[in-house]
Image 1 (tube, rainbow, N blue to C red):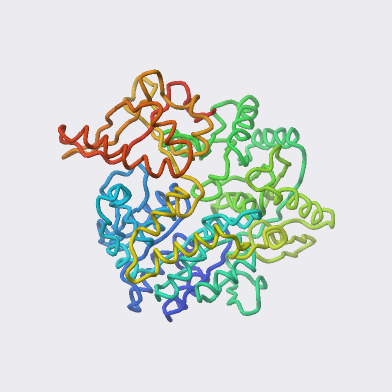
Image 2 (cartoon, rainbow, N blue to C red):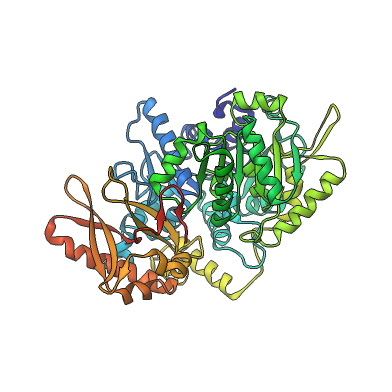
Length: 587
């Protein structure tokens, strides 16, 4: 199996990038797009186009994984300390942190990249928001001007299944593509699951050529790359079925008992917990692993270590990108086709399991969830479209971008489902709120004499430049005898506001907060109390949180000033019992 940077699709991207063209790169799941970034950096440097690469990803787990890969890769090349990360809450310490994006390879979340590009430097965010000073915002932007930017997993930025209201991430993608292309910053946008209309809009906004790893997919103007080795390795006779939830659970247990690893995916944490309980009863707790977005960092890491020994893995959407799973059977709640394709992309990945899938075809079992959140009308449309394909006697090809026909096997590519259900463009319906956001964001990025004021106004309204909510970090008390201190977990402001009484450690004397502080040699957790009414008011709405957090952190910093410590972050403490070890935050 060739290295990712040796594949024909990557060769084509590198060649086009080296000629000074921006690229939208469409390749199947498991093709190695992320691992090929060093090759793209090498090409951009060799042609004098960029001095560094900024690799932007939508999830923190992906950032952590890619940072380790880039760090190890560059160290083997003799470049120690050349890789950095730009994201909070990873538990990596300060050594690799690259707040101004100055290292040779920086791996960043979309949130942090958005702040730096909009003149709110992450390294000085707290003081900038408090108005102490405006920050050295042109430093990361100067680094950006000499960088190759890779926007990876771009379908997650666009959220094409959202129909009723244009998501902030899609608005940000639209404006940032325009800014990067007009600034002549080399750009590669990568995806596996995106409708043609959206690809065309992105390519137009980025002034980019489209390269797709397929024989016939997309538009005739696209550059198609036929990777026969990859097609041969990853062409399976997929079997897809739709059934009830009860039947799907029984099938999952049956497959796991016959030594076929099962990936069971749900659209919500509550649904994942219900499935985990059923599978644990049927298979035994030691044979089932649970992964979702409300696990603490320690529990998530421990769950990841158990993946290779598990008979069944139960997960939410977090499994779609950032978790290296190699299963043979997917049992899933129906979702948007792009999400289903990403989930199916966790099947038959390694050479060993892929060979096994040649003899025992991979299974995809879908069932209708009790709630349509977060995909809305995309769920019934997906079920209807899958039913129609199966009723015609055809199968569904869940990995390759082309339809497949061979030796009596006739399959329609998942891409047809994406085109049918998620046929959204980059621009949503015009609204006053959307126009205001776009105008302010453009001003924060593009005005030559701009300042952080425009982006600060957006944060006051939305708490984020790319999502409609703030992420609040909770301090989870360690409840076992071997551990001391706190673990951490990020939840949305809306979730915490709704469940604060059950989650937060508050009593008549106030609410417990934990301050992460840095000393001369080490870090420390310091426990403090805040007035209960302050915490409640902060959680009421986004503007309150955006205004209160920097003030409360400054207050904590003042309290620690005489102890030789510098306050870095403030966490709200979860009460004991709110978090269940291995299950997560369950209220």
